[in-house]
Amino acid sequence: MSASDPGSASVPPWSVGVSLQRDASGRDDAGMDRLAGKVAIVTGAARGQGTAEAKLFAAEGATVVLTDVLVAEGQATAASCGGTFHQHDVSNEDAWQRVVDATLEAHGRIDVLVNNAGIFHRARMIDHTLDDFRRLLDINTIGVFLGMRTVAPPMIAQQAGSIVNISSIAGLVGAPNSIGYGASKFAVTGMTKTAAAELARFGIRVNSIHPGMIETEMIHEVAGHDEARLEKIANSTPFRRSAAPEEIAYLALYLASDESSFSSGSQFVADGAVTAT
Image 1 (cartoon, one colour):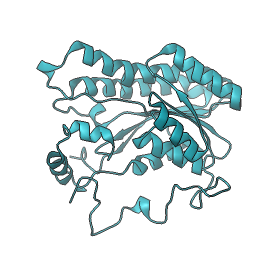
Image 2 (cartoon, one colour; image 1 turned 60 degrees about the vertical axis):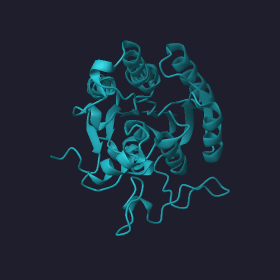
Image 3 (spheres, rainbow, N blue to C red; image 1 turned 180 degrees about the vertical axis):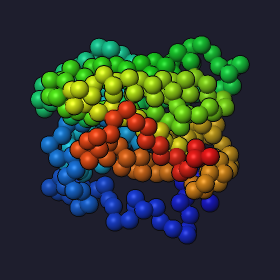
Image 4 (spheres, rainbow, N blue to C red; image 1 turned 30 degrees about the vertical axis):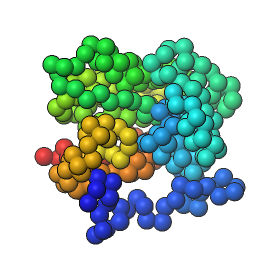
């Protein structure tokens, strides 16, 4: 069984009867308008998990603003789900302000921010360079901080909003050969709780998602692009498989929607029971 193969014994529940393909009217036949009327910004949306989140949000009625440094892929993804795309380096303060200002000018409000953009660097602690460590913090940590800080004023003015920060199980437990990545994701976990405490009185919810092994480009980087090693890692987990990006997107959808109206400052783990013991 490969890392991306859910196995022949069962079909993942998320995939039953679900399609993210939109019809000519822009509606998805499986959608239920769980985000109807909401405006959502999703960073790192050009591929992988960000793409899954953007497409699902659009299928559920949201107006989606996609951002990424990958322009061609980001534009194609936006076109596929009826969203708009902005080239965006999340570590840049001015770039964040431009994205937020453009979104407010076009749509008048921001209801949801998914801080999805992130990078991984594999290295033993004794081999990890300071430059690589700082780059991880710039994108994975400072990017999240800047995103929360920049969307907070319009959300405060609305007295409502949901911020979903994509952390990792590496932001909950130690992981060998990823000290910089772990530091950046533990910081996201902590910032989420602080922001949630500060913004609760304005009706703004802030939560973090902690994925485990997800079938995206990043997991191949984690395995050093060694497919045999990747399969071995997947088979060592309780579910004996990696997750599809859509499985995380549905969790982000719940947190973005009004269904999670009393959830804030919480860690939502989606790792197939990897951290259960």
